[in-house]
Length: 387
Ligand SMILES: *Cc1c(COP(=O)(O)O)cnc(C)c1O
Image (cartoon, rainbow, N blue to C red):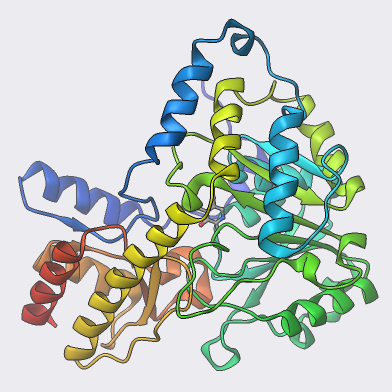
Protein backbone atom coordinates (compact mmCIF):
# COMPACT_ATOMS: atom_id res chain seq x y z
CA UNK A 1 0.00 0.00 0.00
CA UNK A 2 1.09 3.54 -0.44
CA UNK A 3 -0.22 6.52 1.45
CA UNK A 4 -0.62 10.13 0.49
CA UNK A 5 0.04 12.72 3.15
CA UNK A 6 -2.91 15.02 3.74
CA UNK A 7 -3.02 18.22 1.72
CA UNK A 8 -2.45 20.13 4.94
CA UNK A 9 0.77 18.28 5.70
CA UNK A 10 1.92 18.67 2.12
CA UNK A 11 1.44 22.42 2.43
CA UNK A 12 3.82 22.77 5.37
CA UNK A 13 6.92 24.74 4.40
CA UNK A 14 9.93 22.59 3.50
CA UNK A 15 12.49 21.93 6.19
CA UNK A 16 15.51 23.94 5.08
CA UNK A 17 18.09 22.65 7.51
CA UNK A 18 18.28 19.18 5.92
CA UNK A 19 21.66 19.73 4.30
CA UNK A 20 23.23 21.38 7.33
CA UNK A 21 21.86 18.64 9.59
CA UNK A 22 23.27 15.97 7.32
CA UNK A 23 26.67 17.65 7.15
CA UNK A 24 26.67 18.09 10.95
CA UNK A 25 25.92 14.41 11.54
CA UNK A 26 28.60 13.34 9.07
CA UNK A 27 31.18 15.62 10.71
CA UNK A 28 30.35 14.16 14.13
CA UNK A 29 30.63 10.60 12.79
CA UNK A 30 34.07 11.48 11.42
CA UNK A 31 35.06 12.44 14.94
CA UNK A 32 35.54 16.14 14.19
CA UNK A 33 35.31 18.54 17.16
CA UNK A 34 32.13 20.43 16.25
CA UNK A 35 31.21 23.64 18.08
CA UNK A 36 27.44 23.85 17.82
CA UNK A 37 26.19 27.44 17.98
CA UNK A 38 23.15 26.39 15.99
CA UNK A 39 20.53 25.20 18.40
CA UNK A 40 18.42 27.37 20.69
CA UNK A 41 18.56 24.94 23.59
CA UNK A 42 20.26 25.99 26.85
CA UNK A 43 23.40 23.98 27.65
CA UNK A 44 23.08 24.55 31.41
CA UNK A 45 21.08 22.32 33.79
CA UNK A 46 17.71 23.03 35.40
CA UNK A 47 18.21 24.59 38.88
CA UNK A 48 18.69 22.03 41.64
CA UNK A 49 15.73 23.24 43.72
CA UNK A 50 13.38 22.60 40.79
CA UNK A 51 14.72 19.07 40.30
CA UNK A 52 14.29 18.40 44.02
CA UNK A 53 10.69 19.62 43.90
CA UNK A 54 10.04 17.23 41.00
CA UNK A 55 11.60 14.25 42.81
CA UNK A 56 9.55 14.85 45.93
CA UNK A 57 6.34 15.30 43.93
CA UNK A 58 7.05 12.21 41.82
CA UNK A 59 6.95 10.07 44.99
CA UNK A 60 3.42 11.26 45.74
CA UNK A 61 0.81 8.78 44.37
CA UNK A 62 -1.80 11.53 43.99
CA UNK A 63 0.45 12.98 41.27
CA UNK A 64 0.45 9.75 39.24
CA UNK A 65 -3.08 10.11 37.93
CA UNK A 66 -4.44 12.16 35.04
CA UNK A 67 -3.80 15.79 35.74
CA UNK A 68 -6.61 18.33 35.48
CA UNK A 69 -6.89 19.57 31.88
CA UNK A 70 -6.67 23.21 32.90
CA UNK A 71 -3.66 22.78 35.19
CA UNK A 72 -3.39 22.67 38.98
CA UNK A 73 -4.93 25.71 40.67
CA UNK A 74 -1.68 26.16 42.66
CA UNK A 75 0.33 26.44 39.43
CA UNK A 76 -2.15 28.84 37.86
CA UNK A 77 -2.02 31.00 40.99
CA UNK A 78 1.79 30.97 40.92
CA UNK A 79 1.68 32.09 37.28
CA UNK A 80 -0.68 34.93 38.19
CA UNK A 81 1.64 36.08 41.00
CA UNK A 82 4.69 35.80 38.68
CA UNK A 83 2.96 37.93 36.03
CA UNK A 84 2.04 40.52 38.58
CA UNK A 85 5.58 40.62 39.96
CA UNK A 86 7.24 40.77 36.52
CA UNK A 87 4.85 42.95 34.54
CA UNK A 88 2.45 44.47 37.04
CA UNK A 89 -0.37 42.74 35.14
CA UNK A 90 -3.38 41.23 36.96
CA UNK A 91 -4.65 37.90 35.63
CA UNK A 92 -7.59 35.81 36.84
CA UNK A 93 -6.00 32.42 37.58
CA UNK A 94 -9.30 30.61 36.90
CA UNK A 95 -10.23 32.05 33.53
CA UNK A 96 -7.20 33.80 32.08
CA UNK A 97 -4.37 31.29 32.52
CA UNK A 98 -3.85 27.91 30.85
CA UNK A 99 -0.77 25.73 31.53
CA UNK A 100 0.65 24.04 28.41
CA UNK A 101 2.89 21.10 27.53
CA UNK A 102 5.49 23.57 26.27
CA UNK A 103 4.54 26.75 24.48
CA UNK A 104 5.20 25.20 21.04
CA UNK A 105 2.27 22.91 21.74
CA UNK A 106 -0.04 25.79 22.62
CA UNK A 107 1.14 28.04 19.81
CA UNK A 108 0.66 25.25 17.25
CA UNK A 109 -2.82 24.33 18.55
CA UNK A 110 -4.14 27.88 19.00
CA UNK A 111 -5.19 28.47 15.35
CA UNK A 112 -7.42 25.36 15.52
CA UNK A 113 -9.56 27.27 17.98
CA UNK A 114 -10.12 30.41 15.91
CA UNK A 115 -9.26 29.96 12.22
CA UNK A 116 -11.63 28.77 9.53
CA UNK A 117 -10.52 27.52 6.14
CA UNK A 118 -9.00 30.36 4.15
CA UNK A 119 -8.57 32.70 7.11
CA UNK A 120 -5.21 34.47 7.18
CA UNK A 121 -2.53 34.68 9.88
CA UNK A 122 -0.11 37.60 9.78
CA UNK A 123 3.27 36.07 10.56
CA UNK A 124 6.62 37.80 11.06
CA UNK A 125 9.33 36.80 8.59
CA UNK A 126 11.79 35.44 9.72
CA UNK A 127 10.07 33.62 12.59
CA UNK A 128 9.83 30.70 14.98
CA UNK A 129 8.34 28.02 12.66
CA UNK A 130 5.18 26.93 14.63
CA UNK A 131 3.36 30.19 13.76
CA UNK A 132 3.28 29.02 10.14
CA UNK A 133 2.84 25.31 10.91
CA UNK A 134 -0.07 25.85 13.29
CA UNK A 135 -1.84 28.13 10.82
CA UNK A 136 -1.50 25.69 7.92
CA UNK A 137 -2.56 22.67 9.99
CA UNK A 138 -5.71 24.59 10.91
CA UNK A 139 -6.52 25.21 7.24
CA UNK A 140 -5.43 28.85 7.35
CA UNK A 141 -3.20 30.87 5.05
CA UNK A 142 0.07 32.55 6.02
CA UNK A 143 0.74 36.17 5.10
CA UNK A 144 4.34 37.06 5.89
CA UNK A 145 5.30 40.44 7.38
CA UNK A 146 8.99 41.07 6.61
CA UNK A 147 11.14 42.08 9.59
CA UNK A 148 13.72 44.38 8.06
CA UNK A 149 16.86 45.80 9.61
CA UNK A 150 15.91 49.35 8.58
CA UNK A 151 12.74 48.99 10.70
CA UNK A 152 14.65 47.53 13.66
CA UNK A 153 13.13 44.15 12.75
CA UNK A 154 9.60 45.33 13.60
CA UNK A 155 6.78 44.57 11.13
CA UNK A 156 5.42 47.44 9.04
CA UNK A 157 1.63 47.11 9.34
CA UNK A 158 1.06 49.62 6.53
CA UNK A 159 2.65 47.21 4.05
CA UNK A 160 0.20 44.34 4.50
CA UNK A 161 -1.82 43.86 1.28
CA UNK A 162 -5.42 45.06 1.81
CA UNK A 163 -7.06 41.90 0.44
CA UNK A 164 -5.02 39.76 2.87
CA UNK A 165 -5.70 42.06 5.79
CA UNK A 166 -9.43 41.75 5.16
CA UNK A 167 -9.23 37.98 5.71
CA UNK A 168 -6.74 38.18 8.58
CA UNK A 169 -7.73 36.80 12.00
CA UNK A 170 -4.45 36.39 13.88
CA UNK A 171 -1.40 38.65 14.26
CA UNK A 172 1.74 36.99 15.67
CA UNK A 173 4.30 39.03 17.58
CA UNK A 174 7.48 37.77 19.24
CA UNK A 175 9.65 40.22 21.21
CA UNK A 176 12.34 39.70 22.37
CA UNK A 177 12.61 38.04 18.98
CA UNK A 178 13.89 34.71 17.78
CA UNK A 179 15.83 34.66 15.44
CA UNK A 180 16.74 38.36 15.06
CA UNK A 181 17.33 39.05 18.81
CA UNK A 182 15.54 42.38 18.36
CA UNK A 183 13.35 43.94 21.05
CA UNK A 184 10.38 46.28 21.07
CA UNK A 185 9.11 48.95 23.43
CA UNK A 186 5.65 49.72 24.72
CA UNK A 187 4.92 52.20 21.94
CA UNK A 188 5.20 49.39 19.37
CA UNK A 189 2.74 47.27 21.37
CA UNK A 190 0.37 50.27 21.52
CA UNK A 191 0.52 50.58 17.76
CA UNK A 192 -0.06 46.82 17.38
CA UNK A 193 -3.08 46.85 19.71
CA UNK A 194 -4.76 49.75 17.94
CA UNK A 195 -4.04 48.13 14.54
CA UNK A 196 -5.52 44.84 15.79
CA UNK A 197 -8.58 46.61 17.20
CA UNK A 198 -9.20 48.41 13.93
CA UNK A 199 -8.98 45.20 11.87
CA UNK A 200 -10.57 42.74 14.32
CA UNK A 201 -7.39 40.73 14.82
CA UNK A 202 -6.36 38.44 17.65
CA UNK A 203 -2.82 39.20 18.85
CA UNK A 204 -0.71 36.19 19.75
CA UNK A 205 2.31 37.47 21.68
CA UNK A 206 5.16 34.99 22.20
CA UNK A 207 7.12 36.14 25.23
CA UNK A 208 9.50 33.18 25.55
CA UNK A 209 12.58 35.40 26.03
CA UNK A 210 11.18 38.15 28.28
CA UNK A 211 13.54 37.26 31.15
CA UNK A 212 16.76 36.98 29.16
CA UNK A 213 17.64 40.66 28.86
CA UNK A 214 20.76 42.82 29.27
CA UNK A 215 22.06 46.31 29.89
CA UNK A 216 18.99 47.49 31.83
CA UNK A 217 16.44 46.58 29.15
CA UNK A 218 13.17 45.10 30.48
CA UNK A 219 10.82 43.38 28.04
CA UNK A 220 7.20 44.54 28.38
CA UNK A 221 4.13 42.32 28.18
CA UNK A 222 1.46 43.13 25.57
CA UNK A 223 -0.88 43.51 28.57
CA UNK A 224 1.03 46.59 29.66
CA UNK A 225 -1.05 48.31 26.95
CA UNK A 226 -4.54 49.37 28.08
CA UNK A 227 -7.20 47.37 26.25
CA UNK A 228 -4.82 44.60 25.11
CA UNK A 229 -6.72 42.03 27.14
CA UNK A 230 -9.71 42.61 24.85
CA UNK A 231 -7.92 40.90 21.99
CA UNK A 232 -4.61 39.29 23.00
CA UNK A 233 -3.23 36.02 24.28
CA UNK A 234 0.38 35.78 25.46
CA UNK A 235 2.58 32.68 25.65
CA UNK A 236 5.36 32.20 28.15
CA UNK A 237 7.50 29.18 28.83
CA UNK A 238 9.74 27.85 31.57
CA UNK A 239 11.99 26.42 28.84
CA UNK A 240 14.44 29.27 28.40
CA UNK A 241 13.84 31.11 31.67
CA UNK A 242 14.69 28.13 33.91
CA UNK A 243 16.68 25.85 31.56
CA UNK A 244 13.71 23.48 31.30
CA UNK A 245 13.32 22.81 27.57
CA UNK A 246 13.03 19.03 28.05
CA UNK A 247 10.40 19.27 30.79
CA UNK A 248 7.64 20.64 28.55
CA UNK A 249 5.87 23.19 30.69
CA UNK A 250 4.60 26.64 29.71
CA UNK A 251 1.38 28.64 29.70
CA UNK A 252 -0.95 30.87 27.73
CA UNK A 253 -2.69 33.82 29.35
CA UNK A 254 -4.85 36.82 28.64
CA UNK A 255 -8.29 37.23 27.11
CA UNK A 256 -10.51 34.58 28.68
CA UNK A 257 -12.35 33.66 25.45
CA UNK A 258 -9.06 33.11 23.68
CA UNK A 259 -7.64 31.12 26.58
CA UNK A 260 -10.81 29.02 26.86
CA UNK A 261 -10.87 28.40 23.10
CA UNK A 262 -7.38 26.94 23.28
CA UNK A 263 -8.39 24.95 26.36
CA UNK A 264 -11.27 23.41 24.41
CA UNK A 265 -8.96 22.29 21.59
CA UNK A 266 -6.52 20.81 24.09
CA UNK A 267 -9.20 18.98 26.06
CA UNK A 268 -9.77 16.96 22.87
CA UNK A 269 -6.09 16.20 22.38
CA UNK A 270 -4.15 15.87 25.64
CA UNK A 271 -4.89 15.15 29.28
CA UNK A 272 -2.79 17.70 31.06
CA UNK A 273 0.81 18.03 32.28
CA UNK A 274 2.30 15.42 34.63
CA UNK A 275 1.36 16.83 38.06
CA UNK A 276 4.88 16.44 39.49
CA UNK A 277 6.16 18.70 36.71
CA UNK A 278 3.46 21.22 37.58
CA UNK A 279 4.62 21.18 41.21
CA UNK A 280 8.25 21.70 40.11
CA UNK A 281 7.21 24.52 37.75
CA UNK A 282 5.39 26.17 40.67
CA UNK A 283 8.61 26.00 42.72
CA UNK A 284 10.55 27.66 39.89
CA UNK A 285 8.04 30.52 39.55
CA UNK A 286 7.84 31.09 43.32
CA UNK A 287 11.62 31.46 43.72
CA UNK A 288 13.33 34.84 43.87
CA UNK A 289 15.22 36.20 40.84
CA UNK A 290 18.67 35.00 41.88
CA UNK A 291 18.68 32.21 39.32
CA UNK A 292 17.41 34.40 36.46
CA UNK A 293 19.92 37.14 37.28
CA UNK A 294 22.74 34.61 37.18
CA UNK A 295 21.45 33.27 33.87
CA UNK A 296 21.45 36.74 32.30
CA UNK A 297 24.97 37.43 33.59
CA UNK A 298 26.18 34.19 32.05
CA UNK A 299 24.65 34.89 28.63
CA UNK A 300 25.85 38.50 28.71
CA UNK A 301 29.46 37.36 29.19
CA UNK A 302 29.06 34.95 26.27
CA UNK A 303 27.44 37.62 24.14
CA UNK A 304 30.28 40.07 24.83
CA UNK A 305 32.82 37.38 24.02
CA UNK A 306 31.20 36.59 20.65
CA UNK A 307 30.63 40.23 19.73
CA UNK A 308 34.25 41.11 20.50
CA UNK A 309 35.47 38.22 18.36
CA UNK A 310 33.19 39.11 15.44
CA UNK A 311 34.29 42.74 15.61
CA UNK A 312 37.91 41.60 15.43
CA UNK A 313 36.92 39.80 12.24
CA UNK A 314 35.81 43.12 10.84
CA UNK A 315 32.12 42.24 11.02
CA UNK A 316 29.67 44.74 12.42
CA UNK A 317 27.30 42.73 14.59
CA UNK A 318 24.39 44.40 16.40
CA UNK A 319 24.69 43.91 20.15
CA UNK A 320 21.45 42.25 21.29
CA UNK A 321 19.60 43.63 24.33
CA UNK A 322 17.81 40.30 24.88
CA UNK A 323 17.62 36.57 23.95
CA UNK A 324 20.61 34.24 23.67
CA UNK A 325 21.03 34.82 19.93
CA UNK A 326 23.22 37.05 17.82
CA UNK A 327 21.85 37.78 14.34
CA UNK A 328 24.61 38.66 11.95
CA UNK A 329 24.75 39.72 8.32
CA UNK A 330 26.52 37.25 6.07
CA UNK A 331 29.79 39.07 5.35
CA UNK A 332 30.33 37.64 1.88
CA UNK A 333 28.35 37.42 -1.31
CA UNK A 334 27.02 34.02 -0.37
CA UNK A 335 23.61 32.72 0.54
CA UNK A 336 23.05 32.06 4.24
CA UNK A 337 23.00 28.32 3.57
CA UNK A 338 26.25 28.43 1.57
CA UNK A 339 27.92 30.48 4.28
CA UNK A 340 26.72 28.21 7.11
CA UNK A 341 27.96 25.22 5.10
CA UNK A 342 31.36 26.90 4.66
CA UNK A 343 31.69 27.51 8.41
CA UNK A 344 30.82 23.90 9.11
CA UNK A 345 33.09 22.40 6.45
CA UNK A 346 36.09 24.63 7.06
CA UNK A 347 35.83 25.60 10.74
CA UNK A 348 33.69 22.85 12.31
CA UNK A 349 31.38 25.59 13.62
CA UNK A 350 27.61 25.22 13.33
CA UNK A 351 25.43 28.31 12.90
CA UNK A 352 21.84 28.53 11.62
CA UNK A 353 21.24 30.00 8.16
CA UNK A 354 18.68 32.81 8.39
CA UNK A 355 16.64 31.68 5.41
CA UNK A 356 15.54 28.63 7.43
CA UNK A 357 13.29 31.02 9.40
CA UNK A 358 11.74 32.51 6.26
CA UNK A 359 12.73 34.35 3.07
CA UNK A 360 13.50 37.66 4.84
CA UNK A 361 16.09 35.79 6.93
CA UNK A 362 18.23 35.42 3.80
CA UNK A 363 21.52 37.28 4.13
CA UNK A 364 21.82 36.53 7.87
CA UNK A 365 23.07 33.78 10.13
CA UNK A 366 22.09 33.15 13.75
CA UNK A 367 24.58 32.33 16.47
CA UNK A 368 23.13 30.76 19.66
CA UNK A 369 25.05 31.54 22.86
CA UNK A 370 24.54 28.01 24.13
CA UNK A 371 28.22 27.13 24.65
CA UNK A 372 30.80 28.13 27.28
CA UNK A 373 32.85 31.29 26.56
CA UNK A 374 35.99 29.18 25.93
CA UNK A 375 34.17 27.35 23.16
CA UNK A 376 32.81 30.61 21.74
CA UNK A 377 36.38 31.99 21.75
CA UNK A 378 37.62 28.85 20.03
CA UNK A 379 34.85 29.18 17.42
CA UNK A 380 35.87 32.78 16.71
CA UNK A 381 39.54 31.76 16.42
CA UNK A 382 38.55 29.17 13.83
CA UNK A 383 36.40 31.67 11.92
CA UNK A 384 39.41 34.00 11.72
CA UNK A 385 41.21 31.32 9.68
CA UNK A 386 38.45 30.79 7.12
CA UNK A 387 36.67 34.08 6.48
C1 LIG B 1 12.17 28.33 22.51
C2 LIG B 1 11.02 29.11 22.06
C3 LIG B 1 9.76 28.89 22.62
C4 LIG B 1 9.56 27.91 23.75
O1 LIG B 1 9.21 26.67 23.31
P1 LIG B 1 8.72 25.57 24.35
O2 LIG B 1 7.84 24.73 23.50
O3 LIG B 1 8.00 26.22 25.47
O4 LIG B 1 9.96 24.83 24.79
C5 LIG B 1 8.69 29.65 22.19
N1 LIG B 1 8.87 30.62 21.26
C6 LIG B 1 10.06 30.88 20.73
C7 LIG B 1 10.20 32.00 19.77
C8 LIG B 1 11.17 30.13 21.10
O5 LIG B 1 12.36 30.39 20.55
